[in-house]
Each structure stands twice: as C-alpha cells, then as structure tokens.
Image 1 (tube, rainbow, N blue to C red):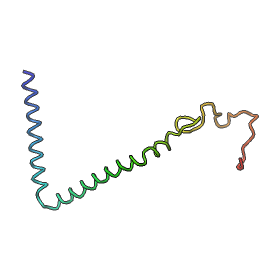
Image 2: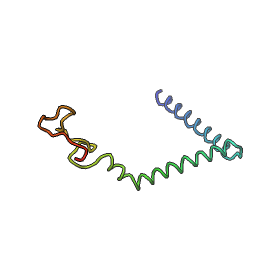
Image 3: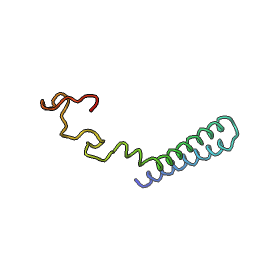
Image 4: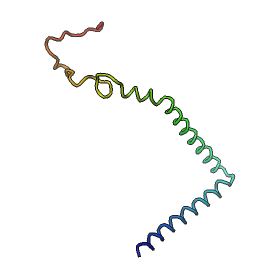
Length: 100
C-alpha cells in the first residue's frame, strides 16, 4: 500500500515537472518582451557566475592568504594569545611613542 502512494507522489511530481517544462519551452520560443527581458537577465546571471568562478580560480589563493595569514599571531594574524590586554600591561613596559 505504501509503495502505491510513493508511486503516485512520484508520478504527480514528474507530471508537474513535465508540464512546467513544456510551458517554459513554449514561452521561451515566443518572441514577446518578457521573454526577451528574461533571456537578458538570465544571460547576465550566468556570465556573472562564470566571471566570479574564474576570478576565484585566479585570485582565490591571494584572498585566502589575506584572511588566514601564517605566523606567530592568532588564527587571523592577530596578536598572540599571551599579549597583555589594554591597561593591564606590566608597569615596567615603556610607553611607545609614534616613532616606535
């Protein structure tokens, strides 16, 4: 009994998808203004995604290195874990000037 319900649900989903696709193809082949606007916007979206993909392939390592620097600092190149916090520095530390 459960299998017939699954088959019925699957059959309805496939029918809905086929009817949507056939209506979409009919609209795609029509030469009205909304289809032309849709084609332009869809092309713009695809070109933008392809450009982002290629830019990430070229500059991805550089961007990644900017956010995850290697060194003795924290995860993002910040101060080490043992750094004094604000006014809690040792009294013997000299005040840094602008030149230093």
